[in-house]
Image (cartoon, rainbow, N blue to C red; front, side):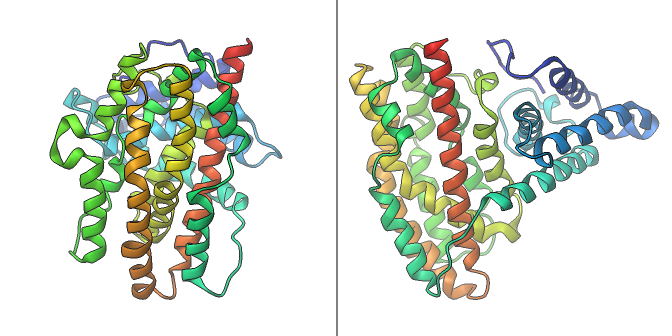
Length: 353
C-alpha cells in the first residue's frame, strides 16, 4: 500500500520507524499469507518486536508515545483497506489476509482494554435523561482552553497545520457511517441514511462535505489529495479514526458507535465555531472556512435527529444494552478532546520551534 506523503516522517525514532517499514514491506508482498505459510520465520522477529511495542504502549505506566504512534499507524494502514480509494487494485491484494486480521485484533485488544481504563461513565437511573443531559451540556459548552487557543491565538501557519492534520479524516468524512447502513430497513436505518445522504451532498459531488474540505485546503495553499499529511498526524488523532473503524466494523458495537456518533454530531457546531472564527480572524476567505460553516449549520439538526430518531428508539429496541450508547458517547468525547489537545500541542511546537 502506497501513501502519498510529501513530508519526511520524523515523529518515530529509528527503532520504531524500522519496524513500521518492515510492516509496510509485508503489506506490499504479493499474497502475504502464502509467503508466511511458506516461510514462517519471515515474520518472527516482527511479531516479537510488536509484542514489545504493545507492552511499551499500553502496559508500562504512562506508556511510550512513540510506541502508540507506531501501533496506531499500523492499525490505520490495515483499517483503510475497508474503504476504496480509487487507486491501484493491486493495493488490495492482502485485504483479506489472515495475518493482517490477526495483527489488527492483537493491537485492538490491547489498545481497547487500555482505552476502557480511561473511560469513567457517570451513573444514572434514567438512560434517556443521561443522554439528554449530555447533549444539552455539549451543544453550547463553555469554550475549552484548547478551543480558545485555536480561536484567538494560532497563526496562519498554525491554521494550515490544523487543516493538514484534520484532512486525514475530513477528506473521507462519514465513510465509517456507510459501513453501518446495510441490513433490514427500519426508521433508525432510514434516519442514519438521511444523515449520510446530507454528508455526501445529497448525491452531488460539489456539495459533498469532503469536497468542501478539499476546496478549503486549496484556498489555504495546501495539497488536497487524501493522506498527503499522514505523517503529521499525532497518535491521538489516528486513535480517533481507528476507534471509529473499531466500532463500525463490529455489529456488536453498534450501540456504542451510535453513542459516539451522537456526541460527534452534537459537539461539532461549538468546536467548529472556534475554528471558523480563527479562519476569519486570519482572513482566510469564504472558501477557507466553508467546511466549518457548513457543519455548524447542519450538525445542530443532525444532533437532534440522532437523539430523537436514533438513540431514543434504540433504547426501546435494546433496553438491556442501551447503556452502551452512553459509554460510546462518553468515550468519544474523551478521545475527541484528547485528539484536539494533541493538534493544539503540535501547533504550539510548530509556532514556537
